[in-house]
Image (cartoon, rainbow over all chains, first blue to last red; front, side, top):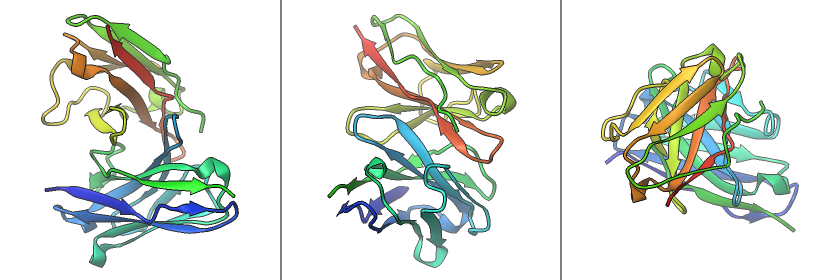
Length: 121
Length: 110
């Protein structure tokens, strides 16, 4: 079964840091590019970041550029999101989502269940 | 990276058809055939319903269809069913290499 499982969400103070992980299974992770998408409580979806299958191409939303870093370890079938200088507006559920195989598809066909990040003092 | 514009809510009766619009600019929706649509039930992760404007993933009912004209994409659901009640989001590729979502539309089946 194709599956993505996020972890690492927590309560953190403003200005703090957090590292999210996403464990992939059921498909050849190293062939696929990946995304992080977040959703603030009661709000809509917001795309956060993209990484190509080998990590050579990366994009960020303006709202997180310079503060968040996406990375992956294909040997461990894992995707990561390092979040620094966290703000209250970063609060929400963070989803990892699969993009295309070999090339970018510009849509996300497999989603994890999400992990919750709360930024509050 | 301004969000795409969707109506906040739409409604319809079982068996009817509804259409949800998604308006962007020539830098996103109008510039590429890379519009996708996602369905999200409360408490669940989003689910891909339409990709590349008109294509349905395997397993998605043919009651769901997509189209685009200029800077506006649309999702049409025909033969409305109670299980279709959910939030729907459009997404588009942008000239910056990023993705952008719409604000979401709450579909109510009356």
